[in-house]
Length: 457
Image (tube, rainbow, N blue to C red):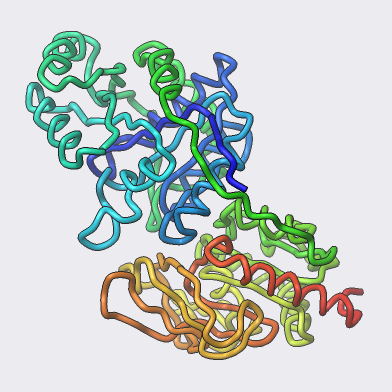
């Protein structure tokens, strides 16, 4: 049965990464919240980190919307699920507006805007430019006839510059300008090898966001943006009914070392009957009472010694997994389950539940979207099972596994990956469980079976 979502919505995009989208997005989001607007937040693509910043601002989990990982139908479903009841849904585009897979717009912010039928506001870095901004605006708007670009915000410009050029830019392009954002000293965010530092690591995040919001309220037309959002048409989607498969407890590693999770994937496990119990491999001495284990990605390499020092938990994890506790570990979680992590001439013992050793490299390894095909039956799927995935890591190992084959999207490249058994998936590829809900169902079923065998104490 077809349903509709009528929540007003708007997508903020930019010509390229580094244009200040996240700062403006969070500033606008907080400014709207301060005005009493109930806002829902989304980020296009596989990025884990920006939604953490959205969540800190919104006070509720932000969601990823990734067309490649989940498909367009699920993007519409997931958007509607979170946007329902909000006064406004604000979406942040990734990379450049038209930048999709390989030489296409597939999976781009442009593609997402079309999929959820959201008007687009382009954020332009105005530093060092004047009337040339008009050419950029026209070029981006007309590059695709259905671009959806209805407005522009100028970043890194002064009030005087904005006032001088606003009228002529609107006359030349036919696009409305919704304000500007000046350069704010000492109000930026740090980066590291996987992008921005996580929200939990920014000690002064609240004061930063307050500054961004104050500036947004002063120099951006928030009422105009809300009016534009209300022009979005009702979005049709097909709901996907889900029934609990049992009542199980799944321990989820959640701390500074392991923090990369898709909230919608966690919600899916809960809808299938899982009670998600957080624990910290950094500080907890024992695993919670559980029927399954989920260890996501993050930055375990930054806490190698602390993870190694927690010998009690490492031993318990190794014994529980050997005893058949169902486990889903990806990227950083996969690394942690290995025998050790090497850092120069130092070697830190880790869990040792899977074979191999890992280390950091100086470049991205096997980066990008891939399609996975199982080569053997495992905890997530039978042989031949497929799901979309994404690899984004600077580490590597001597035992990446061969339980799946990863085929690069749009390119004739492939490689073996993941160590998997009837009770285990451990590999570098990140998957979104909504990309194939049967994977989530199979994992929950394995947890139910473990529970039925008396696996939980």
